[in-house]
Image 1: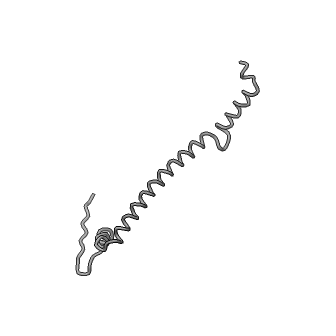
Image 2: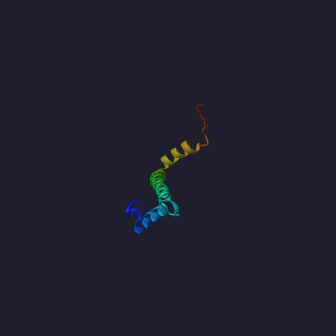
Image 3: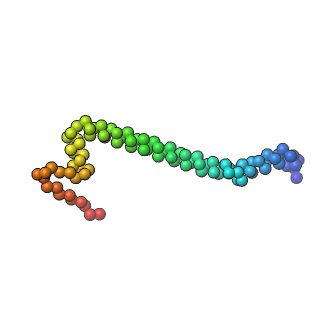
Length: 93
């Protein structure tokens, strides 16, 4: 055996690294998995923040104009006036 492998500090350091890498509950593998999960959640957070800002902008537009509100209600919720007939045409896939 080489002299450095018989050194008690080398053996202690090697055992410590093995402990950190594989045995400990906060090992390198679980830390990597947790960090990737955090990155994924941060990406989702930014996506949903963008969606919230778009929805708030759309809400402000709808509340500012009765014409836009009526158009939105007709398109999204298929609302109609009392003297109108509504025909819904859908395409088969």
